[in-house]
Image 1: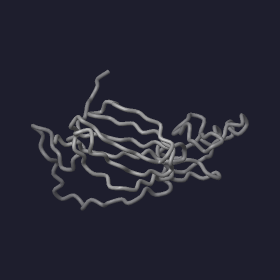
Image 2: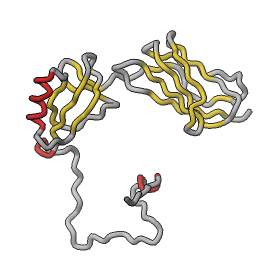
Image 3: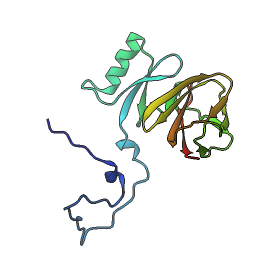
Length: 184
């Protein structure tokens, strides 16, 4: 098996790898922007979920057909819905038999840079008040804390770019805050 790695440059519009040349479209029709897939082009998926609406699996394709699999799940008592479209389990959940967006975390206070002196304190209020806070520096976790009072405080003595992940219980989305700690 051959592996292919794409770096971040491929995500930049117009990027051309070294030694390649652009494809010409002389005489071709003007490209058309598609805003949304036509309903017939949307995939039919089965979304399995628990009793709280947490999506546990999304089945994209099965040999027996989605309708047949849905019937089998119903016979086995597996909570699910047959859905037309794509589902991102990080941003959706099942409520009253419908796929709906997860709730957003509300943060009040100013997200700003801090001095890396251990004293300059960033103070924020988070709703919902109970959440897990994880702090990462250069992609490595450096701190974890379970918060129960809605107060998020951050101070460090090491300069760098920190990511703070606020993760409340279901049905909220995880929220990421990026904070730069600048040498005093």
